[in-house]
Length: 338
Ligand code: TXA
Ligand code: MG
Image (cartoon, rainbow, N blue to C red):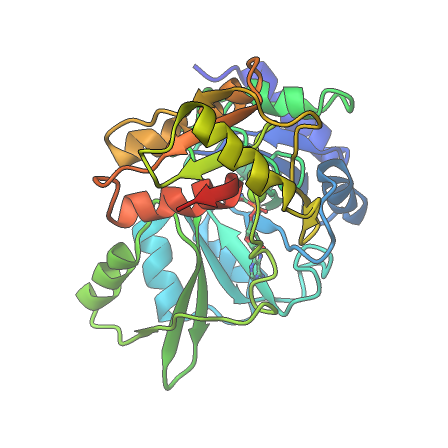
């Protein structure tokens, strides 16, 4: 059972303008009240996150979400009813209640209602939505337990509300919603547990007309980085199962040497003395279970005595849920060996 005392402590600290680690069903968030600019600034500082990458705002009710937007149409209402609380973030036109620091100056805001009861209770009690990115340093592996957050920010002594291990394990689906009286364009900016087919079913059921639009500009999706979620040691995705042992190590070292030190502000890891050993990342057969375990496995293997982590891609790992997981896996990888 959630500890009422711990929840009270989180609320008290948030009221004072502190940042607090909170559990959600996807990953842990590093949260602050949206109405205290100093606290929002602290999120960016603690995460070492560039100010161009906007934060998601977490609400406890649809009414709260409506106040954050300048336009809440039938599509937003339908998707909120069907998927909230849950792992769907909608990007909608923002209202004046949103500090531009949260949205990195964009005219849109990302909003979701998390499913974790402790997160909902904190937001409800506080009466103010919480801005919360995933509680990891910029570019690094997302946290799926309270310990991960505590460990990532141990120098800063951040209070973390322990809500157990995250059920979904990868971040929410991010959906850009452009709704006018004439058309609705939807773009998935980040894949997740809520699939395009789920969204399609929800809207078709209500006879709402819409289109999925594939590509959006970098301006509309500033968080779209080539690399992200990187573990403490390089992750190598190997698509060639014949390549193993010393032959694989030679290939990895050659390819790592050719990489730049940094790509789009994200540091690429290269062991100074080269790579001499590797740990194998083994994922569950069920993609939903695999996603739940993925980030904590990256952390666990990253803390062992290996120089890198190798993941062999398998033929059976196909389909929408695997696609969502591979979005993270490919970005977490320093190298993909065909
Ligand atoms: O599951 C989740 O979404 C977790 C938990 C804590 O809720 N949060 C999370 O936040 O993953 P973060 O900051 O790590 O990722 C948010 C993503 C970023 O890629 C950001 O660029 C994008 O959402 N985003 C936020 N607001 C946006 C906006 N107004 N327009 C476009 N993209 C936006
Ligand atoms: Mg993140």
